[in-house]
Length: 288
Image 1 (cartoon, rainbow, N blue to C red):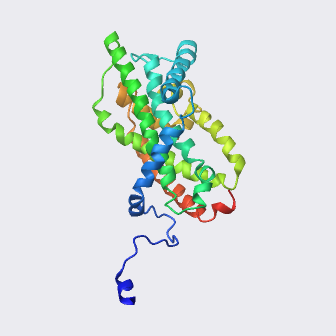
Image 2 (spheres, one colour):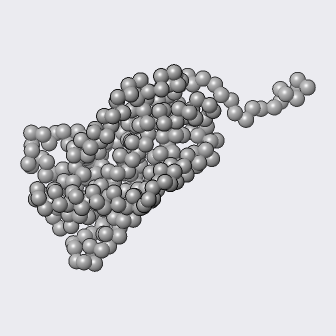
Image 3 (cartoon, rainbow, N blue to C red):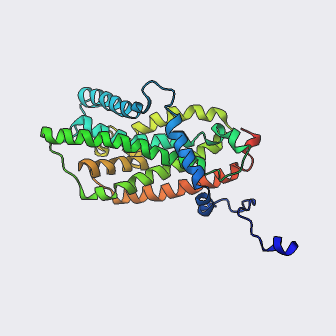
């Protein structure tokens, strides 16, 4: 009997994590069905009891783009060149919305999933990872709206052209998703101890949007406010937004040094967030 048991191998082995930087992709793959269920939950349940349902995916960027066009282009007089102001704003907002959705969804990981975490084991990183993946669906829907308006303005006679760098657009979106995941894991770990920190997230995201060149070209802030232009230049999100507009609308420019800075900072933020996330998951249940 002992010989038979000794030849059997355990399917899963739960052991303490000694490496704070452990991502354990093999274990995540083993729980891929659970990851799919979390993605399905995030997509379906968020708008299940709403009147308009998934239409909110479309309404939010459209109304925001209209508001920005009226205020920043018509009233403030920001020039977008040959690109229609509405399309200029819609492109920036579509990319920006993916980052904010990832950050908002992952920044409340421990607090919103405390009941599940306290009852059953699974790799905790699956929860914030499911948010990043599920928001890709939302981004895809909003991006289709952008394509529809792009085609509309193109046949209307606007001077629009595609850029060959558009092939790298999925990589750019992946970088934004990883940055949102890293910041979200970092914030979610802090919220377990400092509850009032969660109230600052909404305000911080709104402020960050104005510093990320979402509704204006980066070159404009350098010309109009040279004393404060460095704030935008040190913001990695501004380079992502500016590069996305160059890829989608062929306006602005790509800063290779800015993208390199963004990539390095994204990797650093992700691993710092992962470090603190793995450390927090060991004792969060006592403080959440």
